[in-house]
Length: 57
Image (cartoon, rainbow, N blue to C red):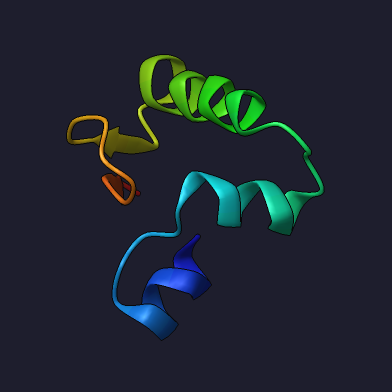
């Protein structure tokens, strides 16, 4: 995600993340993003839009 944000100046979409990590399901990505947000505090999602993730660390 850091590389994508540096290159594109915006967060990747859920589908773009899914393609990059080899997941076929966008809901799997959403689940993992939720874990990164709630359990680890590594990112913040500002709503449910397409590109609303911000990295904290």
